[in-house]
Every structure is written in structure tokens, then in C-alpha cells.
Length: 309
Image (cartoon, rainbow, N blue to C red; front, side):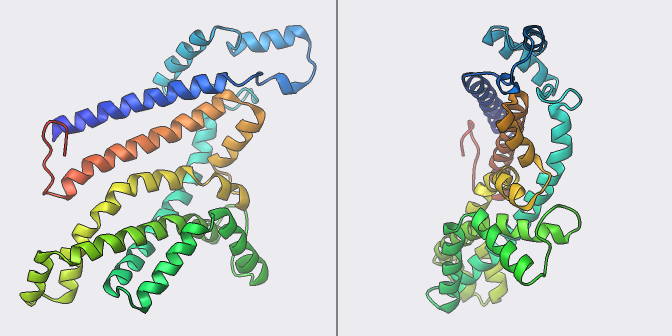
């Protein structure tokens, strides 16, 4: 188990280095520079800015300086602000994005499991059909469309919840629902298929034949094994919720990292774009690594030998 964990950690670090390298060079291959939109400025000022931010250095030198700063967890200064660094942006924006993502995760996983179990237990009956219709709608409709619909009806027409900004718990409900729709429907469909497969296994039939209570058979024997495919994708779902809320944050006016990323793109603020991309990539890679390790612990049937399951 220890050897497997160390191997997975090594691959995670290698993947992160590849992401850093590709993101850095692809960003700097874009024609122009961050100060091209500033209009005419004295040549001396322009040259001083280029020297101060090392933008006139060879690309490999800039890369080395950036990697060196990353090793000390310094994402560098913002090119558009002399008082705020990328670390400041992350410190201010990430807790908001994390709150939104985790709340959407709880809603999505909880409702997804409920709908998936109901659909499997009532296979080819009315509850199954309703659950799958809702799942298809949730997968087909983009979250920004759902967000617009929720704002129009729940906030504007009915006046039940606030539509924008970020303050009390009421402000978190609509964006969380809009963000949770996709993972909820994905988990419901995945769990339904997995449960139908498990329900047909011999040990489930044996458990029923022994007279075990229906709830025990469903929760202890069926759901415990059927949930494993959901666990394998939970890390990716979590990262996507935390990192994929940019559009939702923009629609609802939420001051998360999405706002920082969008402004960085429009301003061609290299450190902001690089910092947010690498920060979120690190989260995604870590969560995938964590799920890989947890999977071997959750399912005792999996044997880890030589770095393979």
C-alpha cells in the first residue's frame, strides 16, 4: 500500500510539473504583451516595466524564475496592480469558490444518490422513468441556462430568493442548485446502472434468501458495492465543481476566483492566469490522487501489488 501511494504521488507531481510547463509556454506564445493595451507610454516607462517583470528576458529564464517562485508557493505579482499579488487574489477568492463548490457537491451527491437508488429499486417503473427524465434534462441543459431560469422565476417572478451577490445563506442556494445539477444527474445515472448490476449478483440473492431486512440488503450489501464507481469519479466531480464555477460566479455576481480569472484573461495578466490555472490544476491532481488511494481502502477486494490494482 505504501509503495503504491508513493508511486501515485510521484505521478501526481510529474503531472503537475507538465501542467506548469505547458501552461507557462502556451501563455507566453500568445502574440503581444500585457502592456500592449495601455496605449502610448513613454519608452522609458515601458522599458522599466518590461525589466521589472522580467518580460524582456529569454523565455527559459522567465520559466526558471517562475518555477523558483512556485517552489516557495509564490504565484508572483499581478501585472495590473502594484499592491495586490496573485496570492492575495487566491486568498480572497478561493474560500468563496470553495464554499460554493462544496455546497453544490453536497447537494449533487445527496440528491444523485437518492435518485439513483430510487431509479434502481423501481426499475422500468414510474419513479425510474421520472428520475431518468430529470437526469437527461440535467445533463442536457447547461448550468448557465439553468442559472438564468432560476433567477427569472425564483428571484424575479416569485421573489423567493435573492438573485445576485454573496452574503447570507440565501444567496448561496440558487448558484449551488445551478452548479449541482450536472453532477447530480451524472451520479444518479451512474449509481442506477451500478446498482442494477449489483442487484443481479448471487450474494444479493443469497442475502434475500436468508431473510435479511430489505433496508439491510439495500444499504449494507447493495449500495456499499454499487457506490464504488461513484467514488472513483468523486475527485474529478469535486474539482470540477470548485473550478468550474466561473460562469456561475459571473452570472450571480459572486466574488470568487472566477472573477479573478476572467479579469486576468481580459487584461492579459500572465501571473493571474497562470496562478489560477496551476492552483486549480493542483487541486484536481490532488483529489484524483486522494481518490486513487482511498479506493483501495474502501474496497478490500482490491489488492495493490507493484503499483497496480
